[in-house]
Length: 376
Image (cartoon, rainbow, N blue to C red):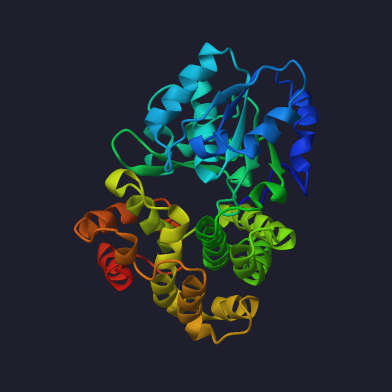
């Protein structure tokens, strides 16, 4: 039985961001560096975060997080952290900003290149708890990184690697669904399908962890019911609440592992400068992976089908295709603009990805090539 740990302190509700001042003071942080991205930096969300800080606390902001976070960006943020004499981190944004802040948090006290701490490089045991406090404030409902133990980073050699440790889980998650109200429909759909994929992949991963499976299944049920409404009606606060909960619950089950969808989406996300949206890649890849994995865990597909409205378990791939179409997401990798030329290399990189080991059906380079061809 794997270790079961849930997980960190979480404040989840409309208006949760207003507790930031109390929480940052309680963690003993006096000079937090806020890590965010250019889009958040020019909007009202960052203003709400800054307003919630205690009076007199410096407003230190690093707003250069790229769409897929890189080791180079983490070094830039670390330079700012040290130059400002910061003593803690507040991550504000989607999964990219949260993952970048986790990497900076690690680099404050752990020397050497980030690849040294990647799971596939034996880095889990090298990560200690000697890190500054971090508060995570998600502004999308997808990655669940606010309660996740991982940081996905494009390291200097171009690979997208997972830094994974329970010590990377933020000290506090402030989950305020109001911060996601009004997200564009395409971003709501793409991030929402990331959450749906997390719930599905963690549920069917073969490790034994019944609490995680129950959380993943409930998260899927919530996400399935709310994602269309949240996408079509961006100011529906109830739908936003449900999607924020689904995203968080999917990440609460990460310790079961993910699977072949993420095995592929991680290397695909590094192509052409990392411009392909992670959640949208997951949405496009999910139907082919569902077809591939069904023979290994048909009984779990029955539970998935019930959570997804009672469809036929052998038709889950078609149901996801239909959902993607309803949400206005692309129907193939080609429709996203993903080139086919690197597929052989992507298949090899997928075999080395940490998510592959927890896929319910054993993978090979050949089976990954076949999945890419199906999704092309």
